[in-house]
Length: 255
Image (tube, rainbow, N blue to C red; front, top):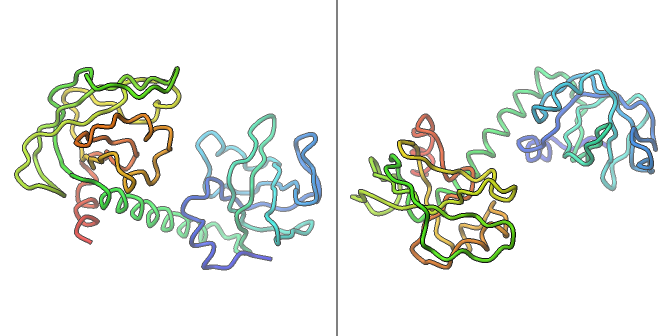
């Protein structure tokens, strides 16, 4: 059964894998020991969306695992919306939904539009959660004196960046300078959290350690933030954006 148009609109924006493929074999898998009554081997014809390292999967076979209530038939040709499942000698994905529409000229714009809509919704959540939103330039960086919450080998190595404010998007007007706490560690837990250097410009959605600001931030990251009520962080990717996103941020802040 194909996924409804309304359901697809919800999943299209953040499904890591979107591809057109034809079912080759049911109850089978391209990875040994993985075959089950809800798996199938699919030949990928075209890729609509995929992580960069997987854009070359067109022309290859992979394993799909379907959710309860969804069935496939041999030779079915569909557009698959899926999450990554197993990455190894072959690729296996978890199907979120499927569409009978296999024209990428139709699905690609839908995926782009859904992704943009979801990205705006996420950014709007971060703007709403922020205690202060500013445009500015980092003028000083130094190691923080705050006590680090103990998280074994994943020490964040907290640093503080001083930001000279050019514009206040949200919060107290007239703010001239703010300080943001950030993890200077390149440990795997902190690798994708922004680090700052002197001279860096940008848009900063500054969050306090509060329940509302936890959305989209892994619990282990939030738990490591020192219990300083006035300390700002930017742990979410949408908390720090380049200046070319300023009009978009202003528009969302006004909503």
